[in-house]
Amino acid sequence: MIARVWHGVVPADKSEEYLDYVNGTGVPGLSSTPGNLGVMVFRRVEQGRVHFVLTSFWQSYEAISEFAGPDIKLARYYPEDEEYLIELESNVTHYEVVVGRELLE
Image (cartoon, helix red, strand yellow):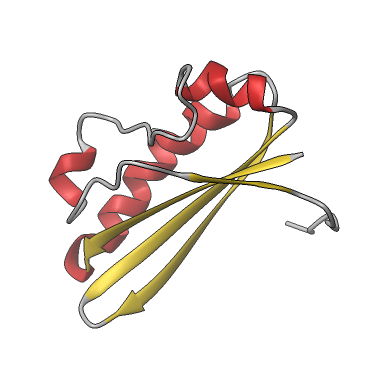
């Protein structure tokens, strides 16, 4: 299993609106891609900014390329992301999941 990790930062006053936006765009886009095994969204408030980390889990690098395109290290953005994010980070990070336990919802 491969974990794809993306990071973005929004102003604190846009945090809830951005979370709703991500739940309506990014999460469904990832989840509906064949080979996606799940998605988790994390957030942390720090000095008037909110950091979001979106981690998606995949069967293979090939499955990731179905979502991200041929250069899987590049972040994929939706048009409205520019309205929220302080900066559009260009890259994501991938990790091989070597230990994992199933989480309860």
